Image (cartoon, rainbow, N blue to C red; front, top):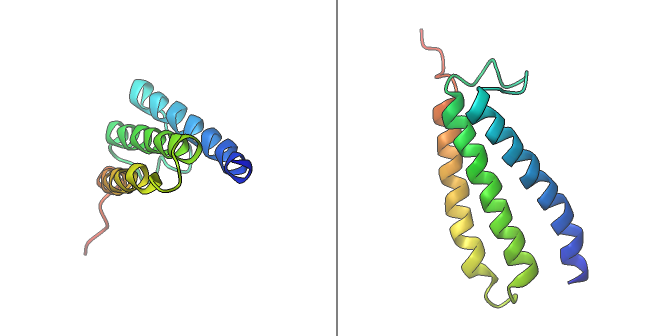
Length: 99
């Protein structure tokens, strides 16, 4: 578990920051300045951020609490949820310009 703790702290911090940003986006429509130009559906983007934060939390529990032989049972559904969150993020962005 020694090496897992080195991964757990940064993953936990990123999950917390994503969750806070997702809540701010859902409740107030707030986005970081570099995201305001690209995101046209902030609520959808907020839900995607919350999904990513929840998935990172589940991955963190899988890293610390689950035996290595059963870790893929926890991580594989997390990969599917992350892919779904990526689809939500692409749907929340501005469509590409067409001529």
